Image (cartoon, rainbow, N blue to C red; front, side, top):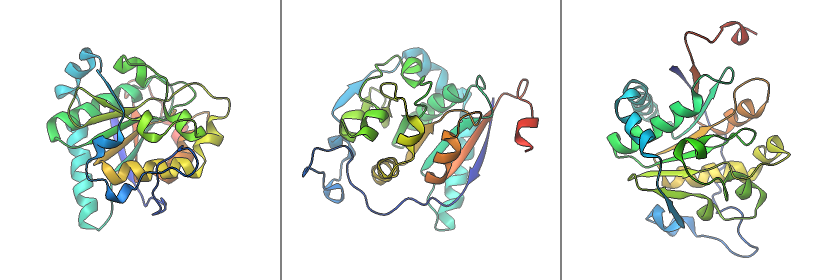
Length: 231
């Protein structure tokens, strides 16, 4: 598995507020110094995944760290990164999850892993955690962002599962609430990784690419064909 990093300018708006709150309720984000006070639940990731992440993804982790440092010298921000692939089965979700754990453990930086694949979510299975109260509920306004974000036993590692299945994933992702959720996360964390669907045949990854600071294309060298990327 290899990853290619593409950076760009994020169009996220500066207005930041908590999402899915009951009417007339909100969190004064600017007054919060400790992100953990926003988080209402804690989980324990599968220990097998944690063990795997220790060395396997060092190269990609260090490449992202260098890319982020280069972006800072140009007065750019590199926090929200979308992970996608050409097709199903290229190891995208496994790469995203392990890389997230590697950054939190080895770099000591706060990272939020978001399962943004509302069509075929897998992060909850990889981590061995429940799927309920996730991104789909936040975007529908039925739970607060603080209820969807989970702390883990790994220091600095937070996750948001995809939540329950929905009939209109593209419509949900293409909303102001999604942009605001990312803005809120970027306000309080060093990294925000989005595990998205593959590029084909659904438009979700392409749509979300305009909301993030960079895109990582994960490919399996021995299997992926270059032809789908040539159009």
